[in-house]
Image (cartoon, rainbow, N blue to C red; front, side, top):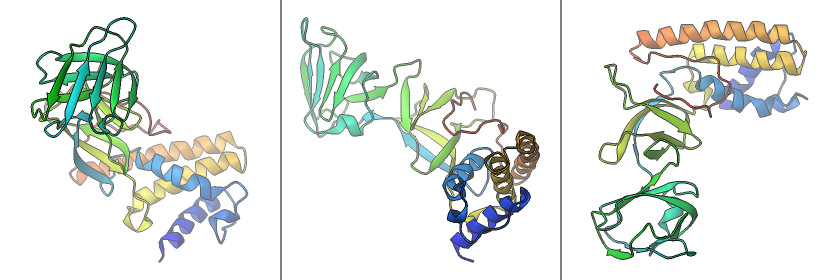
Length: 281
């Protein structure tokens, strides 16, 4: 069966659950079932530690961590000109720096520490203040590292994998000393670092129905039914009924994954977005 046929079958199962006739194509629905399908798929993926979607990866901290072939020029200015950090290349934007972050400098003779950044262009970081940096030029310095540091309480940030719908664990441990972290936008933020990296388990985006487990497919069908109950029938009671049924099925999914060797201890079925903050999981 083709991928599109599998998707249509799941969608039609959801339509039947809410008393509607099957369709020949997702675009046949006036409520735009085709548009919501992929969104609801990713939401259900993010709800449980599905073994078919779980991946492991090492993430490298954002920043310029290899300056061995770069010329970095740090300029300490006086009022009213702000301090700057210049790269002879164009690495600051692609390295993850944004205005409002901080530049955490390591390996410099004069400027070790965390410095607030007002603005970022490809080759220059401009500080929020003047006089906090000491002018120096570092040429091909293998010891120099400039981390893109979040402006909040976290020390480091790491770009999430491009196929991630939810980070599940960071530096997973079996003891009680769990890593504290959060997911903010396209980054994991944490105070943990080991050789400039962290280890993550994450739920990947799996779009081909042939790769889904039967239980995931059933959960997605129920989630679609809960959405259609509102968009087609405007029935909050029916939506609540399907949502309660989905919670029950997700608990089954969690138990089954645990039996298959997944050691994740937490499940959260109350979220409808993958952008929430997740600390300490």
